[in-house]
Image (tube, rainbow, N blue to C red; front, top):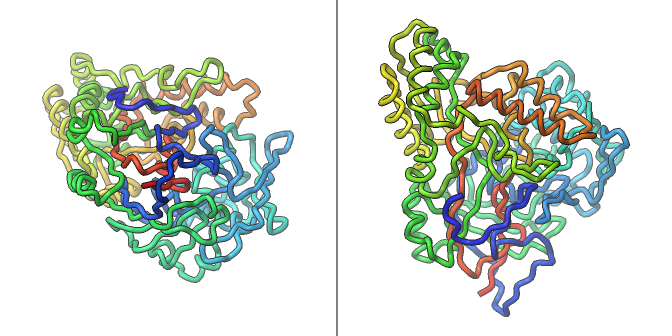
Length: 550
């Protein structure tokens, strides 16, 4: 890891607290006698595309708007949130959650067990086309419901009364309580969804929330918005901030200028900016479990490209021209980590010896730099597909770091592989996402953040039928290993761990997707700003316990 600018504490279950940022309960108290300030201005990593949790791509800052059944605390343990308690059957297939008496949506409507039943069914409705539907796999009949083979009522969830929510599983899920901390499993107010129909989630006034904040002054892809304290939140007494002004700025220099002008209390640094703040007391940093990949469309209609992208030697050749140390150390200058394989560092740890999965995974040629071997694979691959040259479009989002990486890939791959031509297509982030989901691309650089602190967060989306597998790579043995590692009773957790390692080896040997770099956040924070929780998984920034003392 580069730039050890401040001591960090990495927690195995995925929560990382940094110096004064750590605060996860009412036990966190200010040690000074300063005045409590209830307004702050922060920068955001991404814009918010939708407030509809059934249709969201991810949550990041928007996670502050929603509570789920459980919450991951600073000791990396799932603890009660909207559920005051839960019980598990002896066979591990039935979870019974008790919903809090005082749980309400931001409009004052009660949050009941039926709010969860409705939300889960809505997300799994085939018409919703949720990108998070796969996370429900293992809930009884979830996959069949999502594929339209069974009605929504067949989903294994029940609400025998207002405060009892029961989940039936097909098989025990090793990390089920961790899943229940993620916002994709949050409740929804059916009355409000029905009222606004297609416009639900497309305006702050047409959405209600279950978390510590509500959102104001927002529209899809807004660059600015405001989080305001949710006065109907069940735990509002621990929410100290009344107003948090959020700013998403495409140009990182603009965001830094706002911080320097004292118009922001927090900002994320990019590239060359880091060198100017190496010794600053305002500088903090830490990894995020987000891996960036190069993905090929293996079901593309163009017959030549289809043959090329389905040829493992072509995929290996391009990967071997990429020096990931160059990306991490020089191009991105501290805001990334070099990958060791398909799964990020600091995500999950071996139950037998507590070693990082990333230190044990195969990786191999999948993340190696070897120009000579690249040429060998390239010549072999071109011969197999009957071509002497190859040209394709590489789609990238209009973001500074990804643009740099795409330009580097084009330069180094074209230089080392005779007959290769890569045409860069730079598009807005939301356009890239939409085209990726619909398969409207030849190749593109995309990424994935871990929803939970488990290797399957990266491996499961690459299963053949998974909606997140936009490149349509497929391997039967990989599917089998991941399925077994998800749905096991885990009497011997080492068995499960080894299956995930075997699966990672397959995807790296086959180059189902090509890892490029892991995100690493460097940011400036005012000394008077406390209590932000930086999560390495799921919703990246949590402001529930944030406070300012001046």
